[in-house]
Image 1 (cartoon, rainbow, N blue to C red):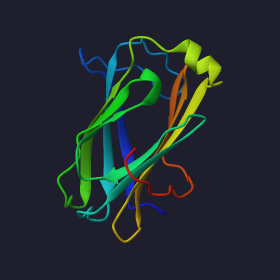
Image 2 (tube, helix red, strand yellow):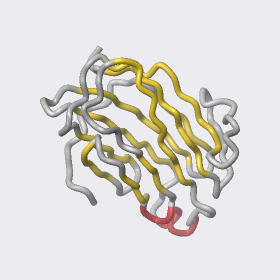
Image 3 (cartoon, rainbow, N blue to C red):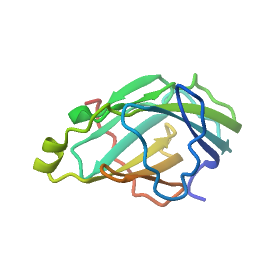
Length: 167
């Protein structure tokens, strides 16, 4: 494997009710205005030390970011498309089974006129965590059809994501 951590579990719940979203194997339609909590369980074979980085790029949408994988942060998605809360994880994180929650904030309405003007109807977001020495820790791809639903692809051989400053 090219990665030092492997996803072994993924649960998606509505944040307010805790109710499980029934299936993420196919396309799932989600009501706008809801928040989702993703619980990711990974089996990590290497220590994640301070200085580990996180990067994400989008295809089909003008969005990218990078930063410290150990620090909590909120990522605001442009055009009012919601955001993502990462809780961070105090580093170093020792090898073993690690569970973390990420909250996705869905917008109450989609800016359909802006999306049509920019010809954006779907979005691919690739994320990756790297150790300070450049070793790949994790990756994830999320495909969103803004008028349809979403799918997750884990793990997959995505190209290296360049590291950019916060934007």
